[in-house]
Amino acid sequence: MKLIKKKFLLPRIIYISIAIVIISFFFTNSYTNAVEISKIEFIGEARLPQKSTFQNTEIGGLSGITYDQKNDLYYAISDDRGEKNSPRFYTLKIDLSKGTLKNGAVIPVGVTTLLNKDNQPFANGETDTEGIAITNQDTVFISSEGDVRKLINPFIQEFSLASGKLLRTLSIPNKFLPDKNGKQGIRNNLAFESLTITPNNQHLFTATENALIQDGLAAKPNVGSPSRILQYNLLTNLPEKEFLYQTEPVTETLNLIGRFASGLPDLLALDNQGHFLSIERSFTGLGFAVSLFQVSLEGADQIQNIDSLLKGESSKIKPVKKKLLLDLRTLDVLLDNIEGLTLGPSLPDGYRSLIMISDNNFNSLQRNQILAFKIKIESPIIRFFRRLIPRLQR
Image (tube, helix red, strand yellow):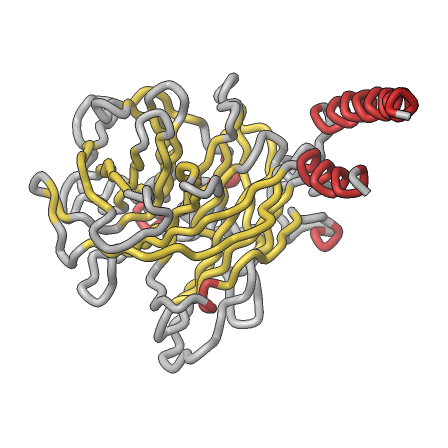
């Protein structure tokens, strides 16, 4: 009887093995080889004390964050334009060893001044640094929104982690550059907030926070804004693709003063196939609304050859796909101006950590706030076999 069972069992193992090879090949070579966030859970908040200083600099304006897995460190860019101190990024340690985040767990351990092409600190007002993304070469890319009012162009540049020295500048397509007539290009303070690099270090992505002037309106109550995602090839240093990202309308909740601001402050690449996390943030007059989305480029139209979305049949353009993962207003936390996010290390229970950081605008009424989450990341093949195995065991 045991021999008969073994004879029946052997073909089943062979068939399953063949199926695994075929399915693995399919997923590995398919555009749909995408990771997906199947679970997200809030695990804590930390705040840096008001008016915190480090090495004679005021810590504030923390607009973007990136994680150095090799050294278990984080780098956070300040958007100080030189009014407090020279443009710079901070090195942080964040203790998640117990699977939670609490006050006192975020410690500044370094600050690096950014140097321009003349190997000098950037002049006051020359930058508005907002995004930061680490490479596998001990460098970081940093994005600046520039200053439309002064016709200072945005930039995306690579700097040494150790010295802050400028190493590389990526070219910006002309359609993004402001002109003196105010008829094209980025809107002031609504430009390249986001920055992320794919895990294979081959592509860099940024996005405008709101629409280019020639593409449509900035976000308003009940009206979203058509932002552009811009993809760079880091092997050629050239921009190669653009995609339409439709932001959500401004949240009107409790808006008593008539001030609105809303947009896309950060993207985070989850894989090499065009799947991301994004955050959208609205200022509602009396508080902030922040949403976390999962984003996919799959099926989205490429728009790099379209200079203006207001011309032609822009309504037929397929934007990137978005799925709401979390409305942060549901958390038991008073939200601040969340602008940056990054994956962190694996937690003790095996889940991956996700970190968000706020820009306090150097305002005494706001805070340098760090939020932590644990997330479950699954690829299609893992999801497939997780569902298949229970069936085989029946």
